[in-house]
Image 1: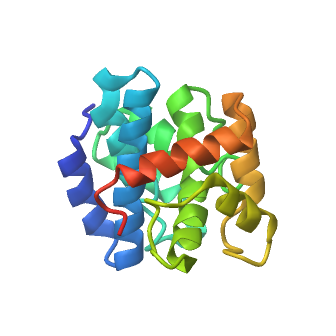
Image 2: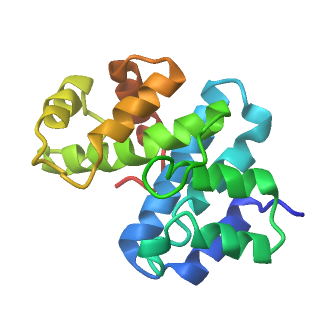
Length: 186
């Protein structure tokens, strides 16, 4: 079994995803996961966390109805590390798989994946179109508006914060900071 480097993960993501949205999302979540690894004391595993973030939606573009299931098959066929397979699949817990996030990294992915989409949507509505001046209060306001970025599942975000033992506001604040550090965020 092997683990991929972030650049190898990026190549694999590009084999199964062609759309700019999915590729950018993979890059952003990878960067966010790397930031969290370093912030939470897992700096020695930052490459692994980034790889998990890059590959979490590996199958979504080609196999949306088999999301988190098909990716496990693809990764197993490539003899990839079971930790990578489990971690990427766990972000679909309660939605498309029953693999519960257990490791802190899996919980961060579960929580931050949906939240990056919401934060990105809030940012593009701002005059600056940037996360650089985005405040938690703006994200909280839009979080309450179920019609705004309706595809971002608020219950998943709340559950993720609970899994981590964090207040929702802390998760929002930390994820904004992580997105500010990402080179993939416009």
